[in-house]
Every structure is written in C-alpha cells, then in structure tokens.
Image (cartoon, one colour):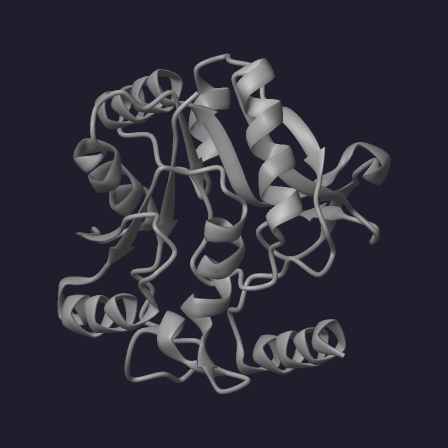
Length: 230
C-alpha cells in the first residue's frame, strides 16, 4: 500500500500573536514544523509528504524544508487555500497517482509520535478510514443561544478528535468532491467521510498530542518535549 501524508500548515497564528507562519515559531530552538515532520518521516509509512502553506509563506516554508532535507522521503510545498478544508483539497489534487492511502496531520501538532501514526495508518489500511482520538474527561453540556444549559451529554460516548486521520485515497477524494458539490464545510476530514455514510474507526490517541493554538500551548509542548529528551 502506497501512502502519502498531507500536513496543513497554512495557519497565520493570529491567536498566537505571530506575524509569520505559526508552524515556524520556535519550540525548544527549532521551528514547530520540524517537530511535527520528524515522526511523520520516521514512521516510514509514507512515500511522499505534502505541506500546505499560504502563498505569503511559501518561500519561508520551502527554505526551512530544504534545510531539513535528508530523510529520503520527498517533502513538497503546495499552496493552501482560505480554509483548512481548501488546503487539503489542493493537496489531494496535487498528489501523484498510484496513492492508496492518504493521512492528514495538522502542522501545529508537534507532539505526535511515529507509533501513533503507524497505528492509525494500519487501521485505515484494514478498515478504510481511521482517526486518532481520546476519551473526553470533562462533563460536556449543550447550551441555548442565550447561554442556558439545554442538555448534559453522555461523556462515555464522547471522543476528542485529533490527527493523524487516515483514509483510502479514493474515499477521501470522493468525500471532498461531495462536500464541494453540497457546499458542506467541516472542521476535520473525518466529518466529510462521515457525511457520506462511510464508517470511521477510532484509534486511541494521546492526551499529549495537543494542537498549538495559543501561547500557553507552546509552554506545554516545551515541558513535554524536555521530559521526552531526558
């Protein structure tokens, strides 16, 4: 099975207070994207990696990737779109033929492990679609528009979804085409596949596999990485 990884990395880091690409913010002296790509490449699952970035940051990202070269796995830059969904769609159109599986992992999730990536890819190979997720620890409530609790959900059935998410290539392409026709927008790739009625299998993720969104998240990542290095 030939697999390709897509890394959406077009975020501008507004909530981080960054003037440049969020994925190039320093994390223990190294750009965040470098930490994200390392386990993807070390997993040995992929014949190619596509990094989606904004047009404004293409030269910066390309320069960084050229400095990180040397793994033997081609890493290419593809111009993303206005939304994450647009960015992944652009990458799907650019991926070379002969791909069986495609995994999507957020560029701003630098604490993923090669082991988790491999497990998700293998589950997708078996079942067609798989995602990393962790059980919800907190009580979750729905509210009205006015902020009044309307329902308390059964947290034993609630999972907090992460990436990587991996799918049969033809399945994900079909899901994106259907979403485009129906003008359906989702916050992750799994939602598009679910919208088609296809089953998506859950793989136990890690509570450390956080997405860097605010400055506090960087501090958490630093502490976890320091612990891993020791």
